[in-house]
Amino acid sequence: MIEPRLFICNGAQIEEGDPTREGRRVINLDTQGIDSNVNINFENVAKVLGKNLPARMIDLLEIAAYVYAADCSTIRGNDWTDGDSTEAWSRDFKFVVAVRDLKFWSSADVNNMLCQLLGFLSDDRFSFCFRHLKSDRPVQEYLEFGNSEDWEFYGIDRVIMFSGGLDSLAGSVLSASKGEKLMLVSHSPVSTMISRQRKLFNCLRGSFKVPMIHVPVWINKDEALGREHTQRTRSFLFSALGALIAESIKAGGVRFFENGVVSLNLPVADEVLRARASRTTHPFTLQKFSEFYRLVVNRDFVIDNPFVFMTKAETISLLAEHGAGELIQHTCSCAHVGRFQSSTQWHCGTCSQCIDRRIAILQAGLSIYDPDTDYVSDVFTGPRKDGYEKNMAVNYVRHATELNRMSENEIATKFSRDIGRAAKSFDHKQRVSLDFVALHKRHGKIVYDVISRQLELHSGELLAGQLEPSSMLALVAGQQHLSPSWKQFAAAIYSLLSKGLSRACARTKPKDEPRLQEICDGILGAHTDMLVREFPFMQWSSGLTKPDWSAKNLDLLVELKYIREKRNLGPTREAIAADITKYGDNNRKVAFIIYDPYHLIASDEEFSAPVTTRPDMFMFFIR
Image (cartoon, rainbow, N blue to C red; front, side):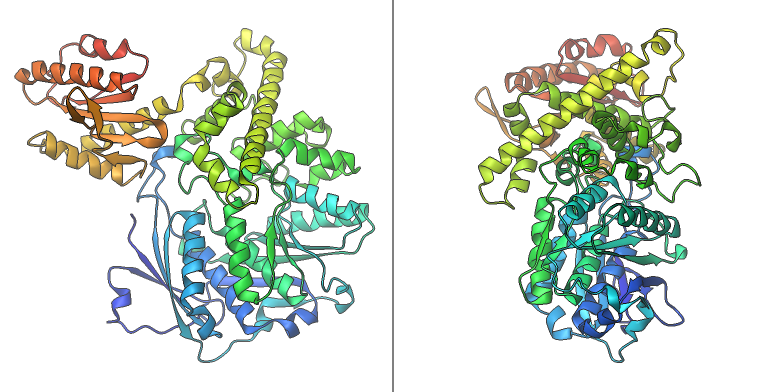
């Protein structure tokens, strides 16, 4: 875990010797004053918003902005993806915030729910201490007032979160086609996103003659605070903005439009298991949002997602059905918006969102509105960098082809925990679970069909050796996507230990195998919580046995062996032979890590032969 952070917000005061500071890096955050470093600005807000905004809602806005600023300024480690890790993945945040409604925010129920919600979103640890705001600050500093005549929206059913992407556009089009009034709320940290969202809204308003208004909100932080791109708490900020607007006009709640594959976000790779698997619109997240905001507004309040049982291709098809296909060209789906410089191309072509977008558009037959030239790198044939970009392409295709190949029962079994957790947020959980399985089965078929057509389309280039070797299609043609996930994870463990041990033991080698295990446990524990030490116990012969580590989700065991002297080779071979038998009897996959710093093994091929002949076992050597 990285060094814990203490964020002192809204001008709260904490003495230098206060125990709250102990062991934490202290950062001051404020939205107003000469030292402000978190920026909030609402555009096009009618005067009624300023009149009707309770103090508690202003507190909510500021708390969400501070959480977001802390999240996107505190670097995570990411060895699993690009090898540039500086600190471990999860983080420990403590906030001291001066608020107006101290009694409400200090309530144990509110505080606990807030911490649990944020913890689920990000897999970080949160704690809050609230102080009384001694002198209130002018809310008007946040608001850029528009015309009051637009406020015929009072009491509408839902405020719609409008990201400027395909799903939120499809939802807005669907709502407008039903004659519903649209109150669209957008968030952006950068000016380019706001301008794109505004342009898309103007095109939408020109296509449908229903009352609609767009409220763009700028919330960002000073660059000096740092930059972390994962931003897993962004949906808390986004939903808080929606809740604030909804409460000001007494709407029934807030509505996200996001396809169900992205909402559930089953891990496409083992490196995307914890906070890397975003939970921004997960059904459990939206359920907790609803419960939390009911406490905040003290009335019935719903956060929902009508697209949760639809694939992206199915949501996009709604645009064509309602005559709005031409609006696609004004949307942006890229995860890296603002992180690459291009005034004419809105999509990088290498992130998972770009892959999702392009495949769904091709499946829906709407590529005329999504030209290849809009992508910096072609999704299928463009070059990909080593590490994240190649891994994303391979893992995306592997995941989808596995879904297409597996039966619905196999999908339900493999992802039982993820699907079960999502279904808990609904009535009729068993039926909902089956719907989620069918959703992912359809998604797998869509990706499989599109990739197949792309391979056929570019078969001549592939045969002629003219296809970019690092492209998605070249990687798929080389069958890299067929490598099972447990093997990829085992290779990632080997990579971590190979790099870590070379540094940790450069001067002094471990005195024995237990000491080596301690060092390895430290290296692995800093980068993943998927591995459990010396677990599980398994029955073998007349006793119990246990591995050095196990990864339950992958049914993978890890065994570490230390070759210190030439005479160790015989006993080590015998130990490996016993492991092969006992773990093989239990139908387990095993990765053997052999630490041979003195190069005592003459032939890796001969030494590993008893293992490599078995399809569910691997052996790696570290020297």
